[in-house]
Image (cartoon, rainbow, N blue to C red; front, side, top):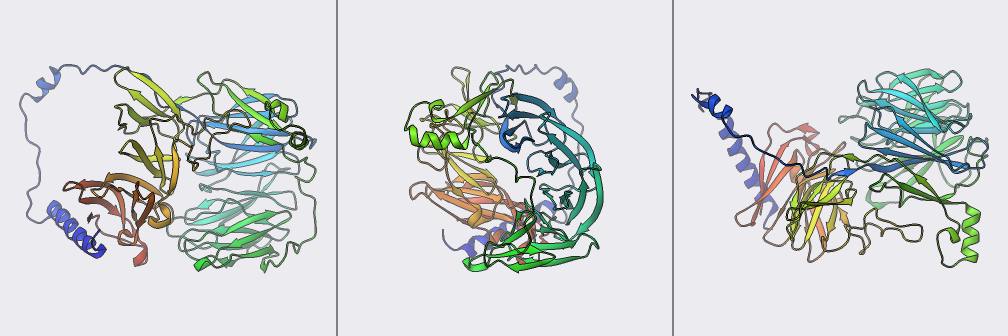
Length: 565
């Protein structure tokens, strides 16, 4: 690399020339012309014959699961969610650890149960809030441990959506929820006895230029609700008076640093990060005030919560929850007392000898997914991934054989590139970087029974192996393209999501095993594609317009080409 300002200036100049040539004054307008015989040529063209080689990108997403206590408080239900993509098809496998019964139920399409809001009510039922994707209005679902089924209670709040939509049970027994209303967050109260929303506060809190977000947890006490509102220009903690609707911003986080709310029935407390690596600050949230937290004694009186009568959660092992080719999966669990006994009496042996019990799940659907652009591995096989976070496979053109490897690393690699004898992939979220060695067995999500888990994704034994995140230096939410440089480094380009929306450019050095990058020269330009030029001495960076964070979030007027030397 020579001088960053040099490549930036050259990039802007080249981009201006290209854009100017496309829209320059005096250029003749392209016009369609008659092509005699074209119709006959097309009609007489030979049919392109294709051969089906199967559906290699098979899989299902398994990472969403919840635990709900049974009404007697003496056992638990594991709610394992299987879904093809965010809005369905979605299947619930309700595993009752008390009766060993497994109940299978198809949940409503058009609802994203991943990141849904959830709260245990005083009636022992589990409340689940998620919007309908056609109306972007909040819906309510209720799981009853007595029947091991989910009831769809329909739309409860019109015009309230959001990717995260927390719920919390209040000390009055009602359910409080939030979500997104355009550039602000919302607030509502749902009464489980009346089975309806009894108050909708509408939009509350500050406005955010790229849309508002709540955090994953909200808080409530007997007088106020507490909601984190973000992301740009900062995160704010908003207190809302439940009687009057009066709202007040109690706390603000530094730009790019995210505050959190922690539920602590019948109240909550907040964690606010500080700039420059300073220690975080913590506050009790009580009666509309943020009180500095100096110890672990809350300012409110104790009150029994819906969770108080519940026995301790059992250990649950999910490494075999992915279905096999026949649609079978296995859930393992053991009670706390069995785990304690095993630690004293057993040093090895089978999982059963160590207190583990297994429950079989049958008929789990796997789905074919759209195949993304593939890469040629050093041995000539094709490496491919499917959409919707599922389905990694290799295809051997010499034998027409497909091998399904497992779920996608990353969660979603948008770009992959071969360097040496290995394949590197990056994408969403945060520019996760993984390396895959095709000469070694695939280990991701290939764990055995308890005692034989798959290696952690960053462990040297893991294949593919996690190397790090580009977002720390480039601020990307999604790495979109990659290229090899003459210096032996692998270069990546992408763009931010949700908060910062400009571009980022990064690189990984396989020899030094180090990654780095930058974002400021690309603040107003989302990077979509990069490509090598002049025997890989240069990297060409193609961008589109974006809000320029370094210029009061004003959107740039034109996309540009940049050249990195």
